[in-house]
Amino acid sequence: MSKGTTEIGYVNRNDQEVIRRTDEPGTDHMQKVYVLRCRPCGAEYGANGSDIHIRLCPSCAGGRPGLAYAA
Ligand SMILES: [Zn+2]
Image 1 (tube, rainbow, N blue to C red):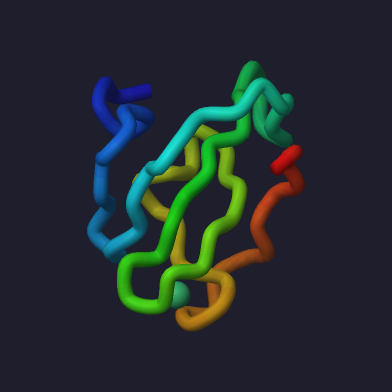
Image 2: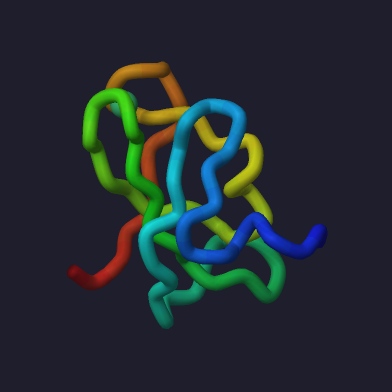
């Protein structure tokens, strides 16, 4: 996994920003769930650390549904 994409404040090419890490297990090998926020619409959703760089917003861009995490 490349360094940087799981850092708070990282923004991917789809304008999805990392806002925090959770302790929830993700669905990919050895991953944790990170909370992303869509900058265009403000939606927040969970994603595997390994997926952050390719995530699309599930609310406004047709991305896959977010992963569950404790609020
Ligand atoms: Zn959005």
